[in-house]
Length: 450
Image 1 (cartoon, rainbow, N blue to C red):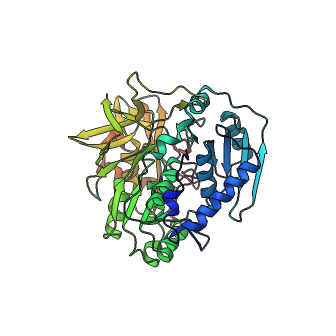
Image 2: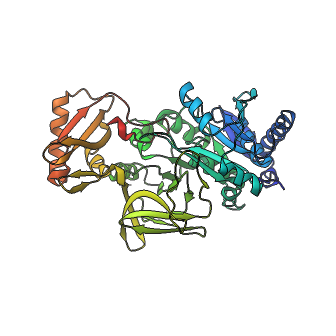
Image 3: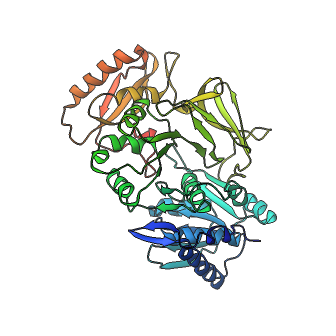
């Protein structure tokens, strides 16, 4: 039986499925691409259970290749273009047997690595006759972990129905959020709008030109939007919903965006490669309080302020690390939360908490306060060793492009503002003005940058 029922999307026929480099692809054309991929994979002897990379930038060809590999029952390792050393690491960790590359023109290559993927998790997928998905973590604080998911369980979340929407594909297919955007959009007959580069200019030009209704993105990117003039130069009237996740949102950023886009609803999402994207409900557009698990298949509990989640689509495990599941199947997210009845606020990873003389400092709170200072485009807060208190707070900031203030003036302004808004132990003892970006290619803050 087909793992992804192509008929589910074929019925949309001439509706617009994907916009890529200014060209529109209908569902009929997308299904044709899937059929072409199936013949290509047949011709190269790709079998169910083979571990296959699908490498390339987001395009209709990559989308169709993914659907064809799922349909075949392969274990898919989606990769975007990577530095050679990182790519070699990923291929080794994933025990990749077949490497497939594709670009937006339809050109493809396929080669076998000579490896035999014998990991126990792959054995479980093959025994169940299920397609698989391998996703690598961003690895911003260490070696990337490789999650193995049963794609059949992932697909179970995406039922036909709902209103077709035009959604911008901000996150790539090597990220659980990118997979979610694609599958959610296609089963509803919506349109995936792609951009050649993820800059505020390119994204909001696409919002205007293609009438994008939903923009899934990250807090880091939205903060970049605030320091551009794109909201003034582009028509955002079609935009209905902005979703954000992957890291804590500075409340100062959210408040400013809600004021600039009063007709747009803002929704906090929560998801992990290990668990999938959880259903959420935001308390309001100007608050970080959120409700989790408003649908079957997800449960959570909180132990010592840390969030643990049980998900029907949870990964089978890591290829290169121990999986932090308890005996009841709950996964330790390592996210510290506070609660207000059924609502919760995610404060950040436990490993990121700064202990200043026994007092806990959450970087996201200080970052939000620092970003209130005019001219600060990015802020990353971390701990710095101190012989007196063990740790002190350090803020690394990037100035907006039009700022030319000297470092001492910036340091003074930040400390003065933080003293007015925060307890004394939270005020940055060190402020570094840096010209380096503080986010990864996935637009997620790199804590090690501080």
